[in-house]
Amino acid sequence: MTNPPADPAPAGQAPAEGRPNWAGRELLLEVGAVAHGGHCVARYEGRVVFVRHTLPGETVRAVVTEDGGAGFCRADAVEILTASPDRVAPPCPHAGPARCGGCDWQHASGPAQRRLKAAVIAEALTRLGGLAPEQAAVTVEELPVDGPNPLLGWRTRTVYARTSDGRIGFHRHRGSSIEIIGHCPIATAPVGSPSAVARAAQAADRPGATGIEVVGPDAVLLHTPAPASARRGRGRRPPDRVQLIEGPASIEHVVLGRTFRVRPDGFWQVHPAAAATFVEAALAMLDPQPGETALDLYAGAGLFTAFLGDRVGPTGAVLGLESSRGAVADAEANLGDLPHAQVQVGSVDPQSVTRLAADAGRAIDVVVLDPPRSGAGGPVMAAVLGLAPRAVAYIACDPAAFARDVRTAADLGWRLAGLRAFDAFPMTQHMECVGLLLPAVAP
Image (tube, rainbow, N blue to C red):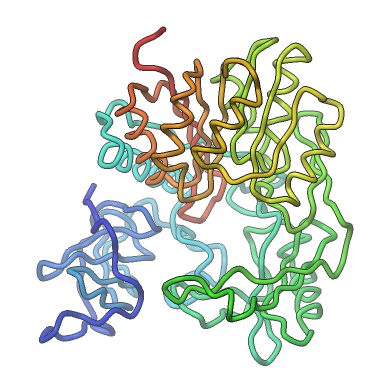
């Protein structure tokens, strides 16, 4: 796989002085390997071209959409001259160049999408994780949905953007313009059907609304801009203010026979089969035993905490850590029948990990790590592995961040002993991994 630049320039960066800007230029490209980010890699006149809406091995006519100014540019394939056998007609009319940015692989068959994602994972684990190719090989597994096509009808929540004239849709790729839509094929009917979109449009007709989030069959949340004073570094705007305007104060999720209640604006996996799948994978890897002590870091509403609590039993203990107070409140309710399992409020950092282990008052046997897209990071990995658990299950939503943390673990004397990957976000570039970390030398 072709290695992309380590840190692509932000959108709109000017090309090098004296070099013409390629934006808008047409290129004839022979497309190479897939790269992380929902595109493939080509080369033209010595420059790397990240090209979307194509597949490895194709010959395409592409239009440059952005000149990165650092030896690369971005482009959309606008004409397929030699098609891959994996190419299919996109089932969504809004997919394609300069259209909706929500999906990346509508033009690829399901098996091809999973092979592309497996290649992205393997490339990250070899290049960033330091693994040998045979260690990084993985098969991306399909998740079931209620319907004939596992690529469609899976998304249980989505945020519709609102235009200034009150229409709704989704942002186009790497832009602020909005693709107006009538339905979303990858969403479940209560979220993406024409009637759901119409309901969202009606709810969006409120002063200050920038978007409407539809969650499951009942909940609707209003998005409004956060104050300018809360603006983040490098000009990035902070997350929207979110307010529940329709539906219940909590949403019920049943996972492997256990019921969880989570506030509508709280985190929960968007694929209906994801939570149970990840729990089963992590528990199979860790094999928690009665009487053991577990940590659940980035615990959310207590999903893994609860099932760890079931496994270790009342003679064991599970301590979770989660930064969102709302999620911790949900976790307290969800863990009411498990007094030996609890989630505390706090950011996951080395000091908090050390304190949490001290609160347990005994050796830590197993750990679940389920960090955000940025990964756990070196200091947290060092703190966790420094507790000397017998096993760590790492749930990863970004292969590059996961690979960097695997490399840190290897430097500290640990190895990636198991890996499963899941297509929890069909049609998009995203996937989920569950990895097992063990000491390189058994104690």
